[in-house]
Structures are given as structure tokens and as C-alpha cells.
Image 1 (spheres, rainbow, N blue to C red):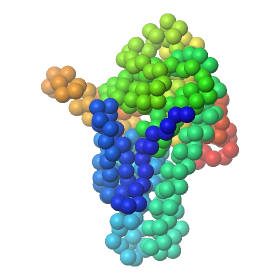
Image 2: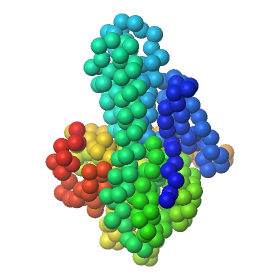
Image 3: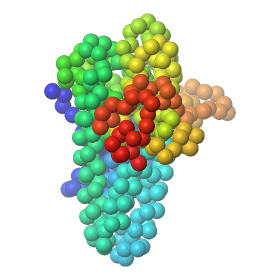
Image 4: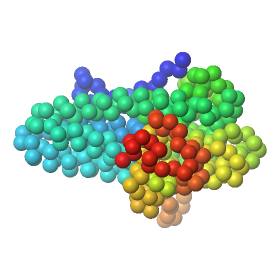
Amino acid sequence: MIEPIRTLWYEEETDSIVFIDETRLPESYEIARCTSLAELGSAIKTLAIRGAPALGVAGAFGVAIAARRSGETGYDQFFSQLTKDANWLSSTRPTAVNLSWGVQRVLSRVKRSGSVGEAKIAALSEALAVAREDAVICRKIGQHGAGLLPDHGTVLTHCNAGALACSEWGTALGVIRSAVEAGKEIRVIACETRPLLQGARLTAWELARDRIDVTVITDSMAASIMRQGKIGCVIVGADRITRDAVFNKIGTYMHAVCAKYHGIPFYVAAPVSTFDFDRTEEDIIVEERGREEIASFFGRTTLPDGVPVKNPGFDATPLTLVSAIITEHGLLYPPYDIRQVNGNIR
């Protein structure tokens, strides 16, 4: 049995959000704490906490912490300030829909409370429920997706959609873990995922910890390896799924196009909370990250002064390139439709 990685949780003794600081991996494994909304926002912006499901849990805990730290005694003033805090937290990563989903879920529960005291208790209770459900959901995604993977073969993945992107187990890597637990002999090719190397730093760390065979390649090697017939399928996570596209880490679209050309299945693993079928690709703001992520590499300057960069955090992969979407409710196949998921998509 594979021992789960616990990524993000609430610690009652210190009334704080506890998490693995992912900016420190793989050099060191460090546990950090947030006791305020500002600290949580900073952790999210710097990617110490990242990954769509983990951001949903963090958003839920963030509203709970803000509620518990509030000094307002009147309910109207309390809820007004909490709403402002919640909106600010949602804005820290605008592309990933799970963050705002987790925030709004707890805020909606607070809104049904009759007093400030009741609201504070309800907020934490709801946030804890979000975290518990995430662990269960990831296991279900793993179970549903494991059958898609070959009994003996190599899977390519991009970025990190593992336990470090959730509260535990993972989505895309959860499928791989579940397949390995079921006895399948799976090898993993992890794209390094420039510019912040989440594939090299995080995915490889997770899989090596679990003794799952993993090899890291540069992002630009993927097409060549597919052409050589060395990839059985591609599996990635998602930060948002609209009516027409999957938003995931920049570079995902390139892998999907290459997989389509080479006749390789391209799978997306994501919880229902990642679906945003009220919107299309053109409605979504893609987060543009800082120049410094590209202009330097491990302490060395890699770009001449004054030369601009483009550094979008995500790209959009048309659903026409996706072979199946793996959710906690089962597998979705083209043509993708909101009615396929038991009415659970917002």
C-alpha cells in the first residue's frame, strides 16, 4: 500500500492552516503555518500552496480563518468584511476556479448563520468538510481512472497534479497511484514544466517517495518520445474546465496536440468542482506571472536586461483534443456535456 502524503490541513492547537511549503522541495521538506488571511494569500501567490484542489481547500480554510479572526460583533458588519476578505483571497489566483469555489462554499454556509458566533463555528465546520471530501474525491478519481492505464506501460504527465496539488493522493497522479496499487506496472515520464519546474521538483519527488518508476524530461522532448512509440497515454490535471477547453499549466496544449497527432490517448483528471460550464475559453483570465521566473534560473541571470517576456501560468486545451475526463463520478467521453455529471456541475 502507498502511504498518502498529507499536504494541507487545519491544526486545532494553533488555530492555523498547516501545509507543505512546496517552494522548498525537493531540497528540503518543510512544514509551514498560516494564522492570517494575509499569510495565506502570500503562500498562494508564491506557490507555496498550489494545485487546483489544494487551492479549493485553502480557500475554504482561508474564509474560516478570516471569520475566526474577525473582531466584528454585529453580523452585518461581520459578513460585509468577510465578503471583502473572501473576494480578495479569490483574486490571488484568478484562473484556478477551485479557489473561488472553496471560498464561496464556506461563505455561503456563513450566510445561513444567525449570529457571528454561529458563523465562526459554521465556517470552520464547512472548511473541514471540504478538506475531508477532497481526500475522498481524489481516491474516487484514482479508482475510476486506473482502468484507463495500460497493465504495462509508460504514462506522460505535465506539471504536478499529485498529492501536493490536493489535500492528499492527487488527481492525475492519484490515477497513477491507484493503478500501481492495483498491480499495474506503470512507468512515468514527468515533463520538467518550465519555468518553475513543478514536474521536476514536485512530481518526481512524490513518485520517487512512493517508489514509482519516474524519469524527468525537458518539456521540448515530449513530442520526440511520443514519435518513438514510448508513451502509452498522457494524463494531466486541470485548473478549470469550461464548456470548450481545459485550462492547465502552460505547455499542456502542446502535449495534447502532439498526442493527437501520434494517436495517443490524452486524459484529464479533475474533480467536478473544477468544471465551469457557465463559461467558455474566451471568458477566462489567464494569470500572467512575473518576468523574474523566466529571466533567472537558480540564481543566474538568463535574459539580457530590458528584454521582455511572456509568462502565462496556464494555457487552454480544446476539449476536442481530450480523450476522456476522469471525475469522482466516473469517466466522461466526447461530446462533453453538463448533463453527464449527475447535475453536479455548477
